[in-house]
Length: 225
Image (cartoon, rainbow, N blue to C red; front, side, top):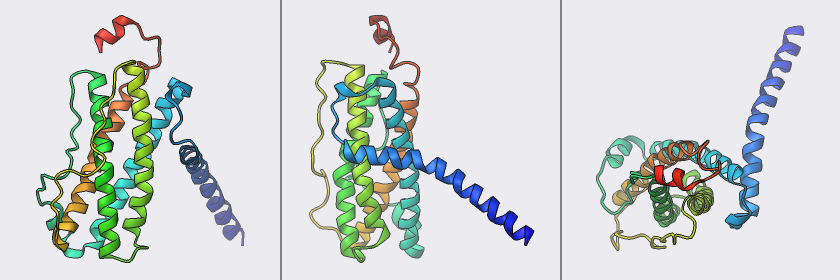
């Protein structure tokens, strides 16, 4: 009986610890859902970077999990379809010599991936029941990636105020007018794989801003970066 009680206490403590870790993330997501288009002018610099980095880390983790679920649903052909080369999927490589250029690259790629993610979600609904976990996961992820893009755009406005930010096309470019089932499966895996790579780089680029972006920005600092 004592052992049983002790195990119950340990389980309860572990559950509470997990809840304390998850709760801030749930609150962050709830805030993003309520205020997805909050004006950048109203954002506190340190909080903006903190929230953006935390949400990007969370979505990187969720993308990894979703990619594993996607591959598991493809059976033995998963490795084959995920290794196919496709030119019509956005690249995941962040480029640029200055920090502003690299953050711009992150923003542009995030926006480019959004319509492709929507296309994969619609294809999954056609290939599998509408309630399948991949389609549901993509639906949630599209919302969160859109919120990350909003915050990254705010970061850009701090790094380079008064400079227009170009917007990529709102629809997928380069997608063939028709894809067979095999092509659709390969396309979905490649989109998720490259999105995972992009989010990993987005985390690193935002981490590099910590301790730099929100301190007093002088002309000397901008020239150095």
